[in-house]
Structures are given as structure tokens and as C-alpha cells.
Length: 447
Image (cartoon, rainbow, N blue to C red; front, side):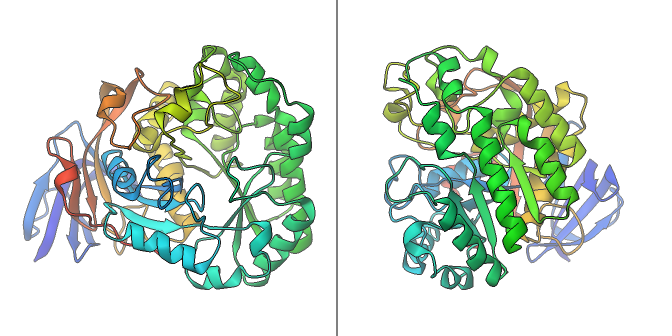
């Protein structure tokens, strides 16, 4: 007797999409059988013909901002948005919460805040800042998934960036206990040389954070990896200029992985209006030709995965400066929309859904060392019923994150999430009110 059987004409298994029945007990996939197999279960669900059964998205780059800045976001609103977007696991960044996750007590504060509110599974990144170098291993032992460092100012005073010498020290320390370094890679000297007065022109904002800032910073990370052997991950790659450098580092055998984000794959600088600060993020959204090359980097395997970099703020911080890109908060709120946004852009390029899920579920789960991200026997029953050909128009009023601001507002996207299961239990249904459900997410630790 299984707890649940889900049947669909299109289930994403290791063989691709095929008719199957997925049998679940105790939160784990126990069997995958032909779609009409006589499996006995307490609940037996057959998906409509227009819905596929796919693994839940694992989003390894989310800023929840609780505690300390819960007017920006929080674990309740963020994880409800995640569930509505087919995301079953998030890993929370160490900033912009107060305190940042740079000590074990701060990690415990995060866990205490998340535990009673999380609708999806939640893990945590630690932070590497100048003040905690030399004492990172206790955070590693406490279960953080790795350590985020900025090479340029982060935008918040409580999370300062690392100098080149401090980056080397952090990498040496993290390599010593087998940890992972994840890096916001923009070079501060390049940013200083290109600083301008801000204003409403999007082209001026892009000019203030040129490709050269990412190129110089990533070159420094590669050198540090070569010297120390640390495992490193480049966050939110925006500049395709750096792809050949990364490809060469990978060919050399250096342990470097790379991510990009839905907004870099969906938007182009030429189509962003002056004053449209909803599109501000750092590093910035670049040209259409750059976007094409990022897609090539994914297809060629130089870019490993896609994560949202959900970085919300209050409406006033994001939109309340008269369209001045120099003053607006930099960050895109994309957690709930990341799957349909990437699928829409991929579909237009003739890429199949299983490739998208490879980058957003399988690769991200593997990167984090989790037993999810695929529909296979023994995997967590974190699943999504998704209608890939259904369209909808984004309205910020329908989004579940706390501040209803989105660069995707008004966009028509393909792919609608109808049901999200976590460990075999429904945590979101499109025809129901997910906010009324009891939080069911687990707190995750690395290792």
C-alpha cells in the first residue's frame, strides 16, 4: 500500500518524458511503473493530458532577508512564492538579513525563524567576510552549504567584501576543510573607474558595471582556485565575455562551477526602458547578443545551472527614486516565476523542457548534494504538475512574495504550475489557497 500514486502520460524519468505511474511512500519515490500499472495506494491521481509530472525546482540562490529585513521578504512569503512556482527547495543567502549568516548563532537565528514558517525545504549558505576569516569551519560543521563572498561592495554595511588577500585567506581556509566558496564576482577597481552619476538612462547603468568588472574578478577567482585547490562557484554570471576564460579553467580541471539567472536569459538591455528600475540588478542585464551567448554557454556545458537570485526589497527602495538607477535597490524578484520564465525563453529557442529541468532541478540538486531534482526510485517525492503549453500574463498582484514588484510584470509566459508536492504532500494547488496550508518544509543541512 503506497501513500500516493501519480499517473501521467508524460513523466520525466531518466529515459526522458514517458507514460508512467510514480508510487510514493513515506515521502520517497518507491516505484516507477507503467502508467496503467495496478498499484494500490491511499490516493491515486491521474494528471490531465496537458500536464507533465516533473521534479521540483531546486533554487540554490534566494535572499529571504529574515530576520532583520522582513519588510523586504520573509520565510513565510518567500516559501509560499516558491511553492506556487514549482520550487520545492531553496538555499538562503547569508545576506540581506540582520544579522548575516556569518556565525553559528546567526545561523541558529535563521533556522529558528524559518522552522515554523517554511512551506518548502530550506537550506542555508554561510558568509565569508573580513571579520570571520579564521573561524569558518564551525559554520561548515553546523551545516551551511558553503560560503558566499563578495569581491566588491555588497550594498549592505554588515556584509563587507573581501580584498584580494582576504579572498586568498578565505579560499585557503575553506579548502582546508573541504568546503565550497561561492562568489559575487565583480572587481571593485573596475567599478570605481567606471562609476558615474547614475540617473534614469539604463545604458549609463550598464556602463557603470561593464563586462570587464566580471572578467577581472573571475580571473582572480580562477587564480585563487589554481593556488589553493578550493572548490568555487561563480554566482549569477551576466557577462558572456567571460565564458572562454571559464571554459579554459574547466578544461584545466579546476573545480569551478557557474550559474546564470532567469533575468539574464529572458531580458536584453536594448528593450529596457529608461527609468525602469524594476530591472536593476548587479551585475546588470546586458545586450541581446550577450544573452544569446549565455544560452550557448548553457548548451555547451560551461554554465552548469540556473538559479533565481531572488533579491527583493520594498517597493519604495526599488521604485521610489524617480527612475534613478544609481539610487534604486539592485535585485530581481523572480522566485515564483523562474521556471515559466526560463521555459518561455528556452521554448522560443527550440530547447526542450527536459533541458530546462536539467539546469534548474537536476544540476542544482547535484550541486547542493541533495536527494531531489529527479524522478527516480529512492529520490525525495518533491514533484510538480506543470502545463508547459498553457500561457498566462504576469500580474504582480498575483505573486506571493511580500513586495509585489517584478521585472516580469505584464509578460506573457508559457508554463503554469498546477500542483506542487513536497515529500508526497500537496503544498500548492492552483485551484486552492496555498497560504492556508500548514508549513511542511524541512530545514536542510549540508553533508
